[in-house]
Every structure is written in C-alpha cells, then in structure tokens.
Image 1 (cartoon, rainbow, N blue to C red):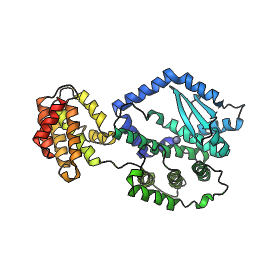
Image 2: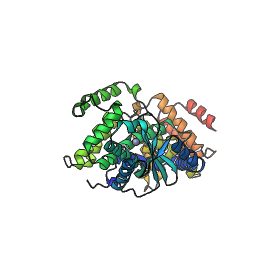
Image 3: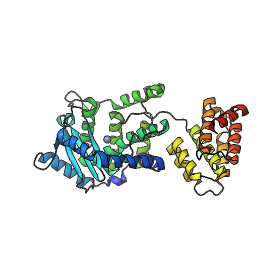
Image 4: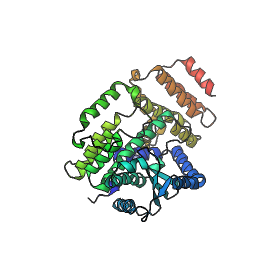
Length: 390
Ligand SMILES: [Zn+2]
C-alpha cells in the first residue's frame, strides 16, 4: 500500500486548518505560544517525560523501537528529532508533544501499551505521526482572549484532525482490522474478549447518536476534542473502501464523513455571521484611514471560516464600499432571520470596528446609521449605542 500521506488529508480538515492560520491574530498567538514552550518549558517537559516513564531505544525495547522506525518510514518522516516515550499513566491515551522547534515527543501511556498488541500500537504511532505530518500542533486550543465562535472552530478542527491522523494510522498498519480493533479497544477499555468486532451494530448506534444530538442541541459539547470512536471507525471504513478501490472519489467519501461529523458541531447562525462581515467591511472601507487596524479587529470578532470566504470573493473587487454595501443589502432582504438581539449584535460589532482606530469618522458614522436603518433599529437606540462607543 504505497500511499502518499499528503494526498489523503481530508479537504474539510485542511480547509479549516488554513482558514484558522490565515487569521493573522490567531497565527501570531499560535507562534507566540509555541515559542514560549520552546524557550521556557522544553527542559521541564523533557524532564517530565524522562522521569515519568522511559525513552524507547533499540536496546530497551527493540520491538517498539523497530515499529516506530518502520512507521516513520511508511509515512515518509525522515526526522530524527522525534522521541518515543512510554509514560506511566493508566489512562488509555497517547499523544504528540511539541518540545521545541523541530523537536517532538510521541508518548504512549502505560494504560494503552498494556491493552494493545504491537500492530495496534503501530496504528497509534502512525496516528500521532500523522498529527506531526500535518502540523496540527499549530492549531493551539488556548490562544488567549478569543471569541466563542473562534473556540468553536478550534475544537471543530481538533475533531477533523483526528480523522486525518487516523488515515496515517491506517497507512502504518495496512489493515482495517487492526485499525478497528485499536479503536474498539480504546472505546471500550477492554481487550475485546467479549466483543465481536464484526457485529458491533455501528449503524444503529451512529444513528442513535445523530438523533439524540439533533433533537437536543444542548447535549452538543463544543469543546469535544475527539469525535466518538464509532464515527472514527466509520470514517476509516469509508476511507479503506477508497484505498482498496471499492469506492471511487475521495471527495464523495469525505462529504459523507463530514456530514456525520457535522452532527457534533454546534449550530451557528451563518447568515448572521455573514451579514456582520459585510457590514463591518462596508463601515471600514467607507473611510480608508487605518484600514489595517480595522481589518485586524474584524478578524478578532468574526467567524474565521466565513471571513476567509468573503475576503477571497472580494479580493479582486475595485470598489470595495459598493461591493460590501450591496452584499450586505442582498443578505438582509430576509430580515425575519434576524432576532432583535442579532440586530443589536450587528450594530455593536460595526461600532467597535469603526472605533478600532480610536476615532469615528463622518463616513463611518453615516454607514453605521444606514446599516441600523436597514435592519429596523430605532434612531434613538442607534444614537445611544454610538454615544457609548464614542
Ligand atoms: Zn489524535
């Protein structure tokens, strides 16, 4: 099975990864955070691994070390800057840790090592190396002060990244059976003595999960970092059909997987998010002073995915004010989609963008008032909000 890991990364994961890192403020926060780990914590972290387990080498564990080298080769990872550790920790887990620039650790918890056989451990190593291959550690989960909508996107990415990494695990072991038994052991915490791998009733259970989450949105955990194991098994089965040529079209397969993963995503008001972006840019471009500061601020208050979409659609447009104004007007035609709190949120956001550079220009104030009028906010309310920002 000669597969290039670069070619099988699901586009839904790669797109979201790029959307997040295209956001200049997030990228800066991520680089700052990784730098800080490099400078302040690399020794501390290495010491913690060395003292709470052991570093694997070809003498102390030839089987694990050979497995590690074999998987690296399969995934075309040449770097010798990755160490493999066993960590004394009963929870069934493993991970990739960033130590400093170009220095990484893969750790396998004792709970995991005691449960899995060597082939299954290879799957896990492949999975963790997949995270490294795709540089997932750059999507940090704690970029400091950040909007709820941004946090939602970060964890959405985390779940998608598991699907990408699992594919590298599958390439490492070249066996769907092994991949499935690994995920089932992790899911159940058992060695599968009492479980029939072929008849786990996945479809029924997946549908039950979907039904429950659809009918009770409150049960959706927006900070869920991993998709449920059954979803991961489903995604691997679909992907395996593709590589064993039982199924054409990776895009079709990825769409099916995405549709299942979407059940885990909190519902967002895309329409409102889009309207906010058009309104903010309308206000911002109506006075060209300090555009850069205002753009940075727009990045700080908008959905990064929607923002990238709008920015790329407008990149070649000459008359930006007209473009964003028309776009805004088109999108608010159906005003019934906006509640009163949506409307006041839009007004708050455009005011904060206009004031990002410390002053409210005449043209900006005019645009804000036009926006408020179009979404039926009363003049006295608008005046009071503008006054608050001035
Ligand atoms: Zn993972």
